[in-house]
Amino acid sequence: MITISTYDGRWPQEFTEIEKALSAALGPLALRIDHIGSTSVPGLGAKDVIDVQVTVAALSEAVRQAVLNAGFQQFREDATDHVPPGADPAPENWQKFLFIQPEGQRRAHIHVRVAGKLNQRYPLLFRDYLRAHPRSAQAVEIIKRQLAKHHGDDVETYYDIKDPVYDLIWDAAHTWAQFTHWEP
Image (tube, rainbow, N blue to C red; front, side):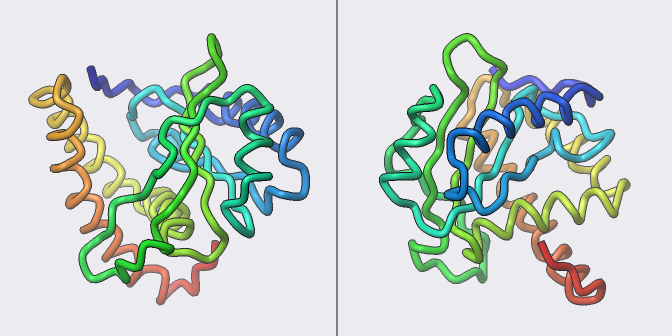
């Protein structure tokens, strides 16, 4: 069941704890570790799941094993991200490793993506755009709350509707990034 929670000021600290564990496990394999998703946008209501992006040079077995050795559980072996309309659909732009939290720990989704790929830039641009545009963040929360209200028990339908809405923001965020000279 999908439930949207009111923004929780503890989310940034909870991310920091997860970041420390991942950083210790991955060492130099992690080029950067970022808090992404709705819980990374101050004031934005979200599912109570901390989304983390680990940026790596390659989706290697060494990376996968390091995350597994830290106790995280691989969620899907062949994970890919949604491709926004007009984006380069080449599979290498959307591949990732996807993990969830160690057993009994705080809910988290760990997305491991390759530096510079479209799916690695997407969540960073999305996050930064919503941080800079609080009214857009409020609109996103309203949409998510309505989706959860009407489709909270149907995850597939929830995402079938949410993804195209986020694609509208992705398009606006690209324009914003050009004017602000945004870099992740």
